[in-house]
Figure 1 (cartoon, protein in one colour):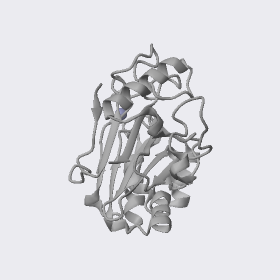
Figure 2 (figure 1 turned 45 degrees about the vertical axis):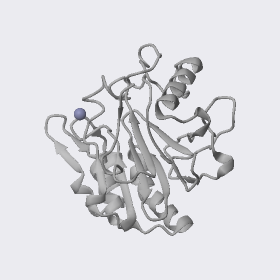
Figure 3 (figure 1 turned 90 degrees about the horizontal axis):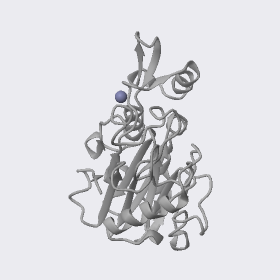
Length: 262
Ligand SMILES: [Zn+2]
């Protein structure tokens, strides 16, 4: 199994993070091979096997995964002891309508899924609390990543300057044409929207840099630029390594990014 990881969390042995790729699972095309999501047309048996392989690789149990039902919302859920394992299998219960998780529970592995969307992992080096978010353009406009920072502040007294944030591969400006409704939504919400909206004279459309938009919204709430690591890989350009919804024309699997306290 080939996982990627961030450098920014390496100095902190109390926390472990990972990003999955397409490699190492049992699913058949177009979900080949490490699809982690039940919400696509892959078989649940394959997803169960893939999740088991991932858990084994990480040295944890599947029942430690906390996986929200993502809806492109701006909802953040505080994971308590009784939430550990929610979303980890089809037979248990779920955390509904949620795109961000935070917790201080050791043993909870927060995991979010993507096929082009931006996944962020957050770690408070002082208070030993963690978070994970998923955001496409909607979640980025409604500031899911900044809302996770706010939720950490409210619930745990996190100081943004103590946060380390990893941002996983996502579709990048090279491949992410967007329509006028998207550019309008960003311009309405961000005074600095032109820093991540780029006019492309070949496609005759704006291209959106979701990574940059996420990075800037985190900086706007006090996370230092040097404490944010962006894995600057485009999921569409690297569709053999990562699931890309646009590349697969909507029919593909999901990769994950996860974080847990040791
Ligand atoms: Zn690209």
